[in-house]
Length: 548
Ligand code: HEM
Image (cartoon, rainbow, N blue to C red; front, side, top):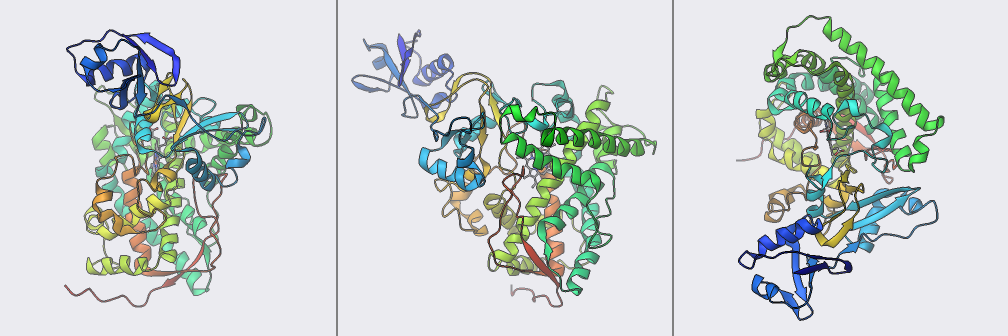
């Protein structure tokens, strides 16, 4: 029988239909022929109207048109753009606000072009789930349109490398055990000590009556913890209020800024042998030297090899783990992957958590009642300054959990994980995507999509108790992405903020210093509040326990 995609007569082809098969068999068969990603959305019709059973389809004397979720096949819509420049000025300098406007104008799947770089974006969780599932249709392949292209690094395996590589497979076997729930539990005392060591600086700033830039200090705090746990390095970020971030931290932070700057332009720009692209290459070389030195220090301690899972629980940090962990064939993480993978895990670890910590403090000084409710929960759970935090303590703080979830919904730091189409394909909604197209599930816009969330602009941690949120689409809330290439450090990140925030909140009352608009840096790889200043006032009084 002849089938064609509604909206594209030229797609017509003969398909043999089993008259005794089911309609879902036929949907699967047709989807396979036309590279339609979700067979369930396939519908059939002829000029008389929709055809919903096999008999009607088999007895049709006319070619049968195929719809996807009730739509004809279509190209992704988007703004037309200027010659050469494309939509650059329609997206920057406020890509969050402008992408929101474009979704409202063009629908849940859009195409933009910035100085030659073509990007597809979606705020639809059904499309996001398809894009993130490493499958016959999509994979993480960092081609020239991919936002990580300027810092692509195949040898790192994780984050900056393609899925279809030996380096990713090896790094993805060795790193996750060191970041799983059990391993992270064993890092809890280090996390606690890290924040306690920072108190002398916040105390001093309080005594001097000084406000401080939240992101700057959370960057120092987040990287202090990740430095100790991933690299076994003490960056001494809290030796004084004015201690400068370590060279390694400055390099990673600058590289992310340069990457976003370079990735927002076409591929030609990344190849320039001078200016920001060359600076980025120099920074990458220097970083390798620094991490190499840290690995040499760990190797000289002479600790013995251990199977993966045991190493994760015994190692004093991830460098120590990575040089001792041995798989069941006696193999180790190869030396080349070791350096690169640890650089990437360090960078992925602190830039994200320091942005999240900053937004968590933003919420304390912005949304009424949050500080009081979080503190009351600590008091009621019997937490005080002597509490030794671990997963059992933090699991007993449900409001803290909802507060963090709502912050990650409303103010998610990462926003542009991208995947690449392996072939020409058709997405839910009928959107046609060519092979090698880069599609970004826009996390901020999914998390703030009014079709999924009631009053998305309202910060309301209690929404997490509602049936609507409990029954949400599985990809409606994906702060760490989803699928095989999702974050491997999410246990670490959540454990860290669940220790840092209560410790800080117990000791200090946070007060916003100024009331102006908070700005984010559109040229940074992550969303962080740039100009948030607070005072942390040492508490002298705590509320009594709530009446039972
Ligand atoms: C709030 C904190 C964090 C957020 C929001 C976050 C978010 C993400 C996201 C969205 C991805 C997917 C990136 C992509 O698809 O291109 C990712 C991947 C990754 N994250 Fe995280 N992350 C966080 C913390 C951490 C921490 C603490 C570590 C390590 C200590 C870490 C290590 C990684 C690594 C290694 C990958 C790459 C995995 C792979 O390539 O297979 N992340 N993260």
